[in-house]
Length: 268
Image (tube, rainbow, N blue to C red):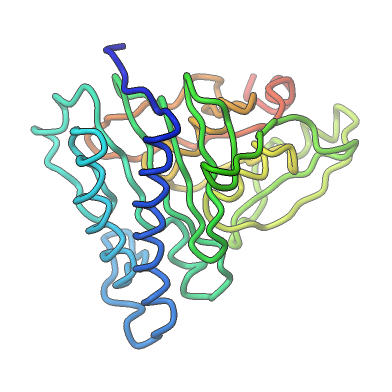
């Protein structure tokens, strides 16, 4: 990989403030239902004025912290341009738009710093709580605020395997019989947005099997943080996720707080 910026305490604090500002823009819309839904994307997922406002703040502000291009879900750059990027920001300005519309509070901002099409740093910010999670290749996994950080350590949450899914998960796939055949007791819970990954990173849950569509900005920041905490995220055949693709779509994947669990659930 090429030389990377140092995500020291000063840069972390500045990034937190920028994401806090984007979060305030989201909350301003959150309190005004007349501004919620403004359009629908090609995949029929909703986009609100909050998504756009947060994206505008991040696209403008991130290059002032590290002067690299920004790929945002709400401002996708042409493939002919971004295919040449070595380092760049990858942003989901509001992950969990459906949670926003359902007023669950389980929506977050995802910001990843990419080098050679791999996430080397990520920060996630939850506007309704002001809590952030961050970590990366050379940055310890932590949560809270940069001036009052708490360590994040992934690992088994208990004797049962606690499996997380989205609010609309149908819990399909072969991971369940594989766990049951190995003698594990399974508990399931629905959690919105990238918060599922953060439960894994904190050792509060064990597995997140994803068998539906996602995009690169959904997983880049969570992957950097989860791996920094000791967890793992891979495709179902064990291969790593690939970033920097023309269509930005992810294959199906599984994330785990304990990489040993992956040997049980991965496709043979």
